[in-house]
Image (cartoon, rainbow, N blue to C red; front, side, top):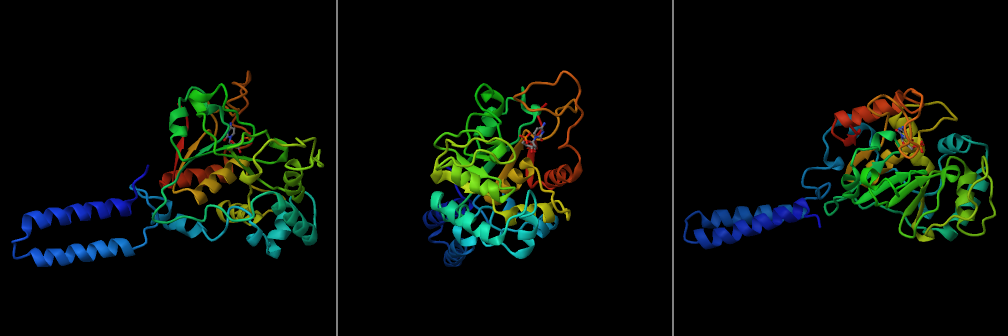
Length: 331
Ligand code: C5P
C-alpha cells in the first residue's frame, strides 16, 4: 500500500509533537513550539496536495511547457453525461472515416450506454491518489528487455491492439488492466481487463454495442470479431473530444482526416488518468528496426517504420526531457 505525502507528514508531525511533549514540557519555549506544531498540523490537513506521490507527480509539475498543454478538464472517456460534441469536434471526428449525422451519433450513444456503464471514470486526482501507469506499446525493443517485473509493478498496465502476454511474460509482464483497441485490431479479453475502445468512426461505437450483445455488425472496414468476449461492465470508450485535443494541442495538427496513432493516444490516456507514467515498447530497436515483439525480427531491414520520427516522436522526446514521463527503450 502506498503512503500519501499528506499522511506521512501528519505522522511525522504527530511523532515530533509526542517527542516534544516528553522531552520539552518544562522548557520555556514549550508553549511557542506547541503553537507552531498545531498550526503546521492544521495547515497540513487543509492544504490540498495535487497528488499523494512521495516523489512528486504530473499534477505537481511546475513545467510551463507541460502546463500550457495539459487539459485535465477534458474527459478522456465518454459517459452518458458528457457525450455531447461541440460542432468543431463533430466536424473533425464525424469526417475521419465516413460521414454521419448528429442524430445518428445521439442514437448510437443512447444504445451504447444501455450496454456499458454510464458514469464517468478516473476523475479522482487529488491528495489521496498516487497511481502509476505502464503504457506498453508493441515494439520489438521489448524483446530480451526483461522489463516484465518493472511493468507489472505499476497499478495500471495499459496494453494495445493485439500485443500478447502469453509466452512473453519475462519481457512484457503478465498483468493487463486495460487494453486499448478498435474494431479492426480487437482481440478477446478476460473478465478482469478493461476494454478501452478507440472510436475512429461512429460505426466503431455501434460495433462495440453490437459485439457485446447481438453480434449484428460483422464488418467495419473489413471483417471484424462480431461477438467479443469482454466484461461489459469494464468497457470504456475514448472521448472524441479527447482524441481531437491530443491531435490539435499535443501534435499541433490541423489537417482533417488525420489522427494520432493508437500508441500516442494510449500514452496521453495514461497521462490523464495516472500520476506517474512509465512507457515501454515504443519506437525502433537499438538497430533502428521497427517491428512487433510478437512477430520476431524481420529478415530484411525494414527501416524505422511509419511510426518513427514525426510529431509524435518529438512530443514523446520533449515529455521525456522534461521528466514528465519515463521511457524504457530496451537495450
Ligand atoms: O502496431 P500497433 O499499432 O499494434 O502498435 C501499437 C503502438 O505501439 C503503436 O501505435 C506505436 O505507438 C507502438 N509501436 C512502436 N514501435 C513498434 C511497434 C509499435 O512504437 N515497432
